[in-house]
Image (tube, rainbow, N blue to C red):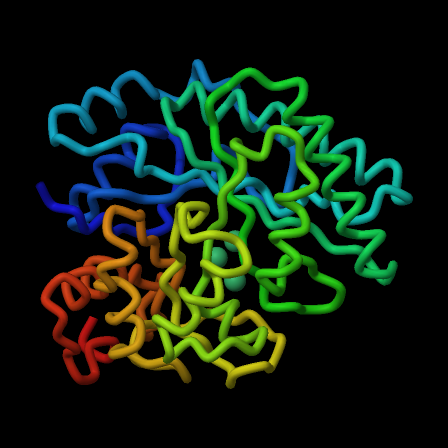
Length: 298
Ligand code: FE
Ligand code: FE
Ligand code: ZN
């Protein structure tokens, strides 16, 4: 069995919805992928019954794709990081609860969530807000979806920027068997970890959180240097991380079986629309071979 699960962020668009998402994954050589169940920046959500999930799942099955490796990303309007912002906080909890049900409707098991931003409040208060919010949501949810807290770049007062913060959240949640972590290579670099020392980072992760919590890897190059606290993704081999290091993450034996998802930018090649880079990036990672100036030739 192929234990390398590699894919990208994919759209979920009318008219084919999930069927179209799965078709795109197959076209681009992906055996896993990630999607939003609706627009990431607003709360309008079409009922899952209209999203052609049955047809999408049938096509997955036909192609032997393991649904337990497919990832949903929670909308980034969810912010559990400051319980004093009552409206935002209540919306975050109800939206996250609803999203868990939607993930379940797709037959998926992994939901990536940005832990939240304390919006200027102290770190401890932010972490406490996140813990309380997750407890309320998970205590009232009976699905088997794992919430994967994403490692963040540390823009503004973003939380989840250190492994220690993630461990604090996990330790504070009652049903923490429902929590995992999504490690984003661009984000850990931008926060300040030495992304080139893959085994060193994994040792640190194991010591602080426990490697068994690691459920998803986001494979992104970064437009900015280490510790810039920026969070701008770049295409493989065009950023400050480089192809060799990203390839080392993808093929590290300790990360066998963990889904790896690209969130690199579409490429502007002067045409009318930007071009998705994923088919080429996935091919290079599978071959473990960087093609010089691949982006110029898309
Ligand atoms: Fe994310
Ligand atoms: Fe990410
Ligand atoms: Zn990012």
